[in-house]
Length: 220
Image 1 (spheres, rainbow, N blue to C red):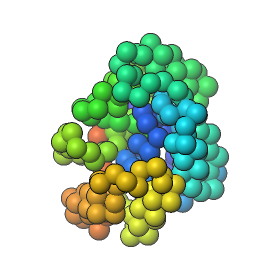
Image 2 (image 1 turned 30 degrees about the vertical axis):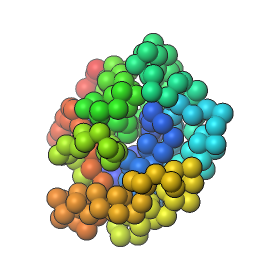
Image 3 (image 1 turned 135 degrees about the horizontal axis):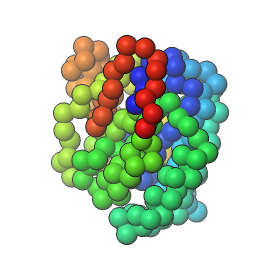
Image 4 (image 1 turned 45 degrees about the vertical axis):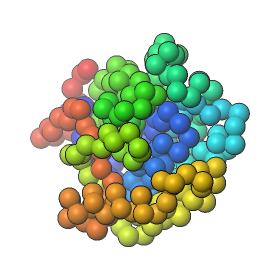
């Protein structure tokens, strides 16, 4: 497990089940990290959506959310809603990513997420990224699986509102959904901000976090 400073993230790994998961769950944090770390390398893997308009949306969105970063986005074509049945393919993909990319921070879904695709990825990520800081992002949805997080990233007013602007700009396919609006995104950000004495924030879940007095890394 590694410690994290916002200005020390040189390599960031983003993992999403569906196009827009990452941006909804961590868009403000991406903007904040990109501003703090110009030239940051970002590797993003989305497991469903290849060959659709959503894949094109994802490519442009994640580049917009990570300005001045080196962004590599892969959208795969696994079946939406059936990732538990493709456990082996998800596992092999994560292993291949791990062999090629050693991130300072991994952002993915949390293990308690009620959506079966999100949960499958979340449970497999620690089996491959065993010595990495993994933070699970929140995706507000009808499942009612919202829990109290323990990790907070304060957002500037600009970052919080820019997140909303970019979501609407880059995901037009989602405009007809009743939950896809500023009240949802800013409402959750305001609540999480209040909980960490900021106006806005995004929050995350950490199943394991190690605090060390120096920069020594433990073999894992």
